Amino acid sequence: MTGHSRHSVTAVTLPHLFRPAEIAEALGCSEWWVKEQARQRRIPFTRAGGAYRFTAEHCAEIIALFEERPDRSAGVPQTAPARRTRKQRTAEPTTRLVARPPRRVLRAQQLAAA
Image (cartoon, rainbow, N blue to C red; front, side):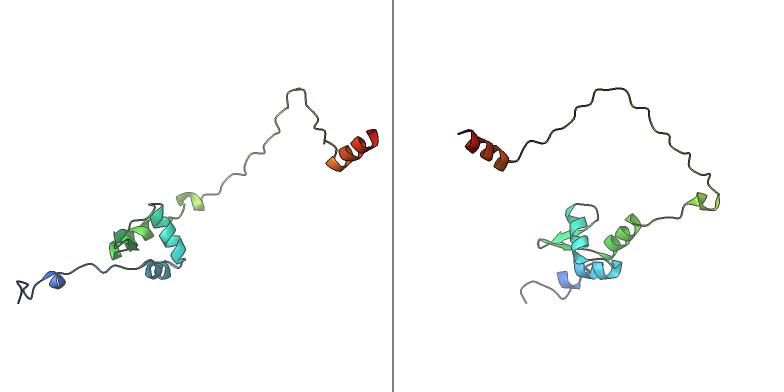
């Protein structure tokens, strides 16, 4: 043997690293979405060998990040929203826009003048 014993690095329990496709399947979204969220640093990930990888803890944290809790005031009847009134416009001078004539009309006028 070359100095490695039976209890080398492979015997150490390493966490299982999931690929983006596996995470996407578990979350019910696209692989592109998972990669994009990782690229934008919105979800936790590990970068092993230049590729995005995720542990089980990362997956649990992603689920917790996007969890939505019910609104506690949902059972309380809400009042109707107040009607918005229009703001009175101040008397500012307005400028009317005027379309310029098409180039073909300008060319026809130039040819007629010549």
